[in-house]
Length: 171
Image (cartoon, rainbow, N blue to C red; front, side, top):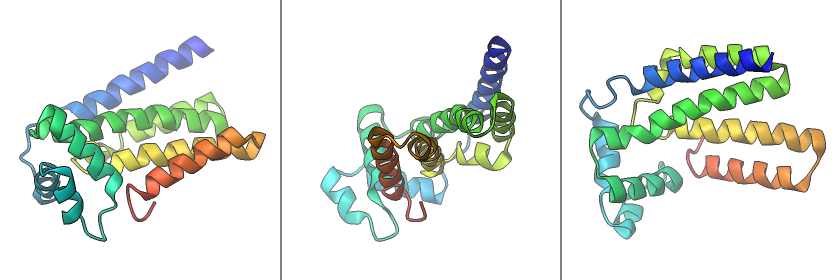
């Protein structure tokens, strides 16, 4: 029952975390990560000025704060993506459980936990796993809003969609 499901979910989260955090700071920063490091290390006004039409600001503002507080090492730059990747596993379980059942949620989370593309996105100092979390949250709240038609769920759904659009142009 629920205890077995919880145990399986914990195992999936541990596996997913291990795959996403493994050697997180071993690779040197690549071109796009270096751009993020450079722009987000500037003062806030200068960073915002350097962003162009391709860069919507939410992730950049978030990373600017991260760099101001924790520095700009490879680990610090990639850690938010890795944490977001693990959160996405949990949210995938929640969405699968809401739409179908707990077994589907477990299988969906397991598949995402071993997905090479998602692992790679969770190890890059980019916005993609952050965007995944926002989109999963928006789907969960869209389901709740559509099913229960509560204003609060519609409002939370709208906030997640807005945050996603301010994170990436294709959201």
